[in-house]
Length: 604
Image (tube, rainbow, N blue to C red; front, side, top):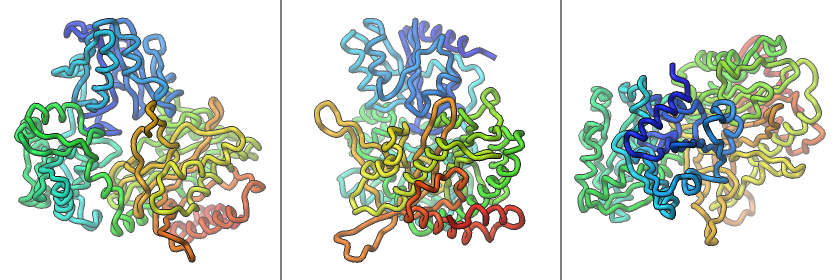
């Protein structure tokens, strides 16, 4: 097996043979997906980095890897600093780094089917002052030296029944067609895999942890659509489900089909349509209108059927996680449980709860100092025991046909009391979670306007966390779904205008509520529930108001709470939350597990 050093050397030789002075390797696929299939894991193959976001830049004499604050510790554990410079984003970027380090006149290659048009334009601008050029390669040079690279999945596409989706595909396509007509558009390119899945009510198994199928759609103003998919993935059930209004075409015909749009006004989202799509449309003479993916917002606003399904999934998932936490309370203090065995046990409890299709992401199972790595992924090399008298953080979720779950619980592994500092930090995180979960807000409010609520108790003592507070969640789709989010406001651009737009929170959106605290080298704390935005009717209120309802129903470790910090209102919330857990979860349990849950949910 090649070492990562040997792989870097092989890539440099390949670049030299092509007359390239450098190449950029992202974690991405042709659909700009967050999680990608094994065939597209080029960055991990090249560097060893296993996170879900990052980019590498390889030059003849130096190389750098770029990650954000979630992966500051992980990248140093997984990537050899003797061969790679560690770079933090947004403090720097591949474009800025190339502008500083690429030699004069450098020719830097990139795969136009793995990057956005805006990214390519930014890098080209950064190279220009030194006479450098960014060029699209005909084939990816990493693939040329990755000898055992997996093939893209040919697993069949699956029908997602209307009893789960709540709305037939024909109705969704008709609404998209009306949207196109409203803006004088002829067609829209739908490249994001979860948008394709949502629009056509199909799912798949091509990408681990996200139930999508590798495909593209071109949707038309008359409500019809072209689905570009490998023929091997098409079943009679899929054909019957799609009907005559969806034309099935080979995925290899996608580029030529874009060239058929000559003279047409075509919508394409620059955030999920790669540079190669824009190039094909430009070459065809289409009038390209850059606009947001028209599936994103309606996908985010869950209909009543989807919301009912999500609550049903949460009930099953909550019982599974509760059984796991009881198991952990018995086995953890023995000192024999490891991060891997704990994650495997949790997975097994979820399997036993019924209808689990997959996990929604790789379980973050962090004992002691590993819990301080925000997006830690355990491996045989990093696997730690859950030591008695330590903090354990587990962030996990399940994919069920009626809903996608995501939950984090932080647990004190006994025996004995947790240190005062740990209790203090945990309670501040918990209070932030409750402050956000119980807030009402006027319509038109964005997530950044609420983010401070979750941080306020940490801020009071000079502490913070380097990640967002909440992300959207799909309906048997991506566990990280836009456009809604709860995070610090976007930074302002140098010209005084705000960089990027923000989506107001709307009834029916599901988000996570997950403040945290991380002490490097010692422990990590996060408390995460999913919440749904709902209308709030307030006596005497002026205007329309919204609030959150908590969807996740799993006990929170009361052993980590500093009761002196909690207000009467916070204690009342806790007691009401525990009562809901008993109503929904307790009927699914019996014996020792039920007794344990009753103890955990006793009123404060």
